[in-house]
Length: 409
Ligand SMILES: Cc1ncc(COP(=O)(O)O)c(C=O)c1O
Image (tube, rainbow, N blue to C red; front, side):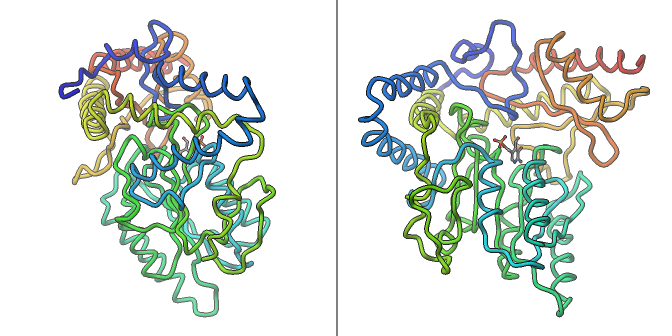
């Protein structure tokens, strides 16, 4: 289709209940009806003849879907596997890499909570030292690069201590919802002999992913957030030079210890899932077909970015605040962070988010996560093919009314 009609008319293609105004897409994603149908078809196949399907027919379908993803990500399909979600992908890499006690891992305090917990685990279990960089947005990309360089230089100047082994780098962080200069940081850390693990949970379907252009050591992206694939689907890329080190979180028949990271011999077989419903993974093909019918990846990215920027500006104007953005305007993809006006409440910080979000869901039939960054409160709204500017206006009105109530608490 050369002139796709984006906006709320497309909501009928999705599985939403009537009246729901879906602005929280970045949290859990959503699937079109055609993908739901395909999902059910694969589940039916598995039930119709469990032995034939699970023993012989299922794996080639998964591989076909990985092949399609590899084209989308510009990498070799031999270097990717499915896991259920980005939390699992992060744990998979961090828990299997052969760290030695004292090894340092570089990370940012803006990392996603589950990833931070996996980092705490390797600190507590293996004695890895975490070197955490604080980021106070809005920041220019160059500031983040310089800050990171300073920390690497500082740590590597300690000649009697182990060097930094690995860096955990967001591509797009969740809170605040901002694009991170992940390609430049990957280059910087790799120049310093540090492995780069990219948390790209929010990437595929939201921004272009081009693995060959920056050669990360590890990269993962959910497909259920922005690609319209059913929930519980994430692609994990591991560069061949590291594949020998990485084993799935649940070990299976194919497990083999490899002293050499570049031993690729069991990377594919180790990630053949034990008995779970893998139908989600098989829906990449149908999701891509639907996205093609809307005009394809570039057209979708263009619209979702444009509507997020316009919608964010509108809501910020309504609230009398501003969008979280830097001077080069590199922070916003299709999720926009909008500052909330100051409020006066007796509620504790931990109660404010749930107060706002419950009211958005149950009284205004929409959703926007709220969070504190650098001493200010923000809300996150998402552009998507099925939203229009007046959906953002609805959220703006709802937030004004809820903040009014919050001031009375
Ligand atoms: C940056 C980031 N990393 C990881 C995750 C975890 O994703 P999942 O819930 O699919 O494990 C999220 C979830 O929102 C995220 O925003």
